Length: 134
Image 1 (spheres, helix red, strand yellow):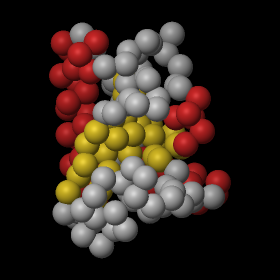
Image 2 (cartoon, one colour):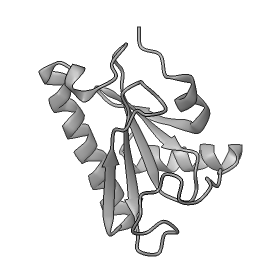
Image 3 (cartoon, one colour):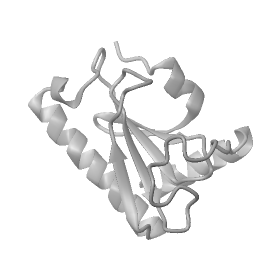
């Protein structure tokens, strides 16, 4: 049975469920940051997904990236599946701008997270739900 890792539950807001992934919004207003979590139990690495799920994951990454690009016109979309803190497979998609506080470095550890606050996080998640066509 799929269950979201407690750290992801604590650090994100749900946006929607796609065929494979739960789409989440990271609670950091510093960066437009989506997280895709394949709804498969006990998966830590992309290579552990079956071939059909791997293909679906790539398509869902491309879909989320296209919406980030069309909505925000970032210089780059950073895509990462690190798993150093949260062992559950999850993929970060972060819209990056030359004006963001970490540019051109990675976002991790660059500046402390700036949470949205509960109401603003829920509102931002609802905006992303609309942008993603849900």
